[in-house]
Image (cartoon, rainbow, N blue to C red):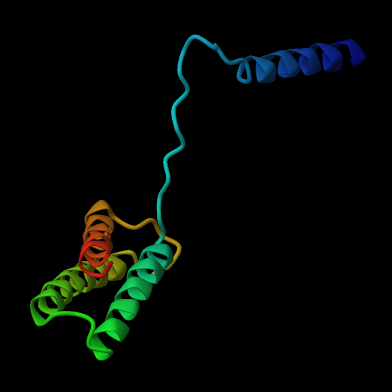
Length: 114
C-alpha cells in the first residue's frame, strides 16, 4: 500500500513539474489586464471631476467644454447599460466598448486640459 502511495505521489510531482518548465526560445504571453466596473468608473469620474473644477475656474473654452461633456455623456450611457447587464456588480470586468469610451474620454481630457 505504501508503494502505491509513493508511486502516485511521484507521478503527481512529475506531472506538476512539467507544467512549470519554460522554453527560453518561445516568447511568453503577456498577462491580460482587465478593469472592473469600479476601476473604470473611478478613473473616468476622477478625470471628469478635475475637468469640472477647471471649467468652474474658467480655464476651459466653451467648445472644449461641450466636446468633453459629450464624451462624458457617451461614457455614462454605455456604462449605465453595461453595469445594469452585469447585475450592478462592481467587481465584474468592464466590457470593451465601455472601456473604449472611458479611454476616449480620458484621452480627450489629456489633450484639451494640459
